[in-house]
Length: 311
Ligand SMILES: [Zn+2]
Ligand SMILES: [Zn+2]
Image (tube, rainbow, N blue to C red):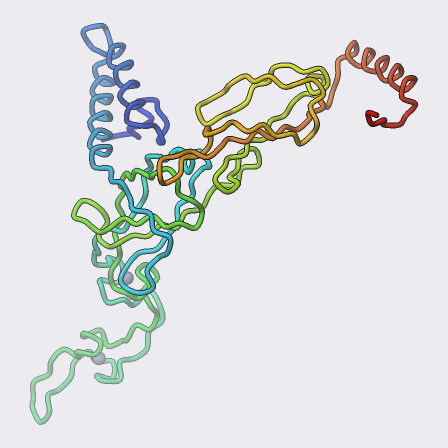
């Protein structure tokens, strides 16, 4: 099938199954040939939907382990998650190792056929060896009749003679994992061909970060709202919300929204902490600047250039 199924459906690769289904139901009406839709695009939509349905059905809940095993045969890599994915859990495509296949470049010998060579010391470059006391000669087993020995390891398979195929599988990442945890995906016939451990890294985000069990969200408040109070838009894990800031908001003030933070492994939630910062625009309109200047002069008169604390 052509094209990325997520693109065909117009959803993000991180979409939940519910979002995929809703997008499909919206599009299927518009594209239905009975209603004048393009039959080719209709078929592409059906195919994309079927493919995603299969992937979402086969998705597996990974196990979370605090440490990777010390020894044994496993594949270790990492996965980078957003703060939101860590806080709420997520569905994610990951590449995992599949079965081995023979390296086509070196034919499985593990040596580079384009690399350096030296003369075979068994057959002295002839490729054939005479049996002891006999008259028959047979193919030299050392150089397999080439007369030369390849010296460099194969660059494709790094001398192993075989390569791992990769496959993409969808995993369900439980909420409540933390940086440094490992996602364990056991080997299985429809999963990876070897046990997989993925170390979790959390993407750095200046505006949204974890602090223990809580999630801190930095909120910029324009200075006039910090001075006089007003409503500001804040991003919570459930989307945008408006909240009221009080008059005279001190810089660095925090507002704790109880149990609106990241999920913990036990299903409980931490808090969402809104950390306010006071924001000043870089530019002002002429009128705003004139008024600000006037305001400045009034305040200078009253306060005389010093900050006064309340008695
Ligand atoms: Zn090779
Ligand atoms: Zn030889």
